[in-house]
Length: 159
Image (cartoon, rainbow, N blue to C red; front, side, top):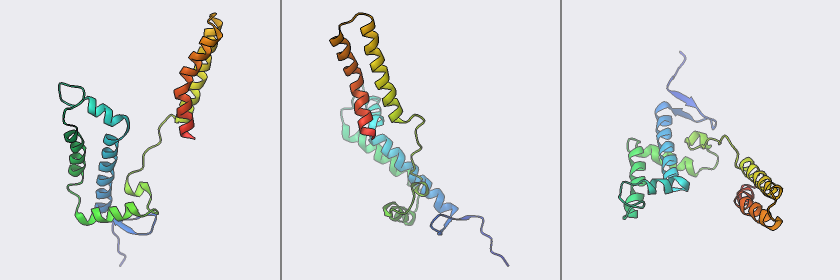
């Protein structure tokens, strides 16, 4: 008699994982990605500026950052403690892939190196255009450097 479990999958490390475990890992991973998105980069600044206060920045900043933690807690509230502990152990294990933990960040459509290079080329074109209009060479060079500076920094930081 062949055993046949439809609710179990074997992952790349040859461990059998149930559908429930995979669903819980997905819930924790999604909550972690949302928390990271709300706490870093432009997302936190936008959330801060769109807070429901009459001022652009909330008066009580601690309450704002507690909201992200509360959202994370709500996202993992239905995950059993045993699975959270197993997720933490897998998170600390360097051999477990981000896809298994559901925290793999999808690649963006436009690579930042290409955006930086396009910005650098456009700044050079703008400088040459100013020269062709008869602007002083030092002025057009200054404009070119001013326009190219942020793109140059972005290009150097991606390498």
